[in-house]
Image (cartoon, one colour):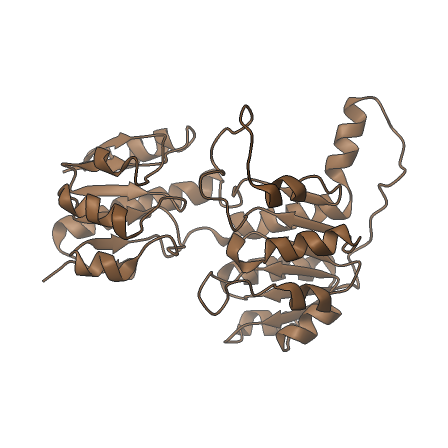
Length: 332
């Protein structure tokens, strides 16, 4: 069976080709699946997509009409897929339910430390041989309070690092994680967590219940000198409300690896184009904000796990097996 993989980054391509070798032939494309590119999949029974693919109703209908039967997404998140339409069309949909939580947790801490210690500003200065310390003062983290929204595998890994820093641990989730409790985490209501935390990090999935969980009211609840980090999904934060708070001079720092309107922007080179997203354009101008391009997961360890699981999902589909990674099973 031939596989068509959309949105493959240059670093990913050799890993994907190596993993599929001896199993199925794979063709890697560097552009993303969208309404404009969906027709390219015609004749391919199985395709693989990235988290920024458009898998809405129109794209799914085009895929089904072209003979596609399996969509193997190379991510844990699947908020970009219309699962109801996929089921009606008889499409099998699988994802990667697990990969290295340390990749994202460690990157979240990278963002936190970068904004706390003004690393980007300092680096830019030294490139111009400006070695002044004005405006670069950070804070010790030991003894301060971190609030972790979402304490699953990634949230737990983030919490373990926070424990190593000697921080006070607050958590919020629908179910308490015993491992976090053992580390000394106290579970509280979201409002209390936001009000008391010096650093807030988001590790919840994007669901209807969590969409813009950090809205204008939540942002106003946070300390004026707090640090906010989001390495999960952009839709967890009301970005326009965040820009308003930043414009008012609030927050020590904000580290964002995701953005709610990142589709069509992230993973692409827009350096020679006029970016029409005024909110993002304003966001990146704040000196206490660091924005990266959805790269928290992007380690050789995590990507290898993602690719290996994707291959296994294809093999399971071909063999008629169903695993925990299947979101929409094969039509009977």
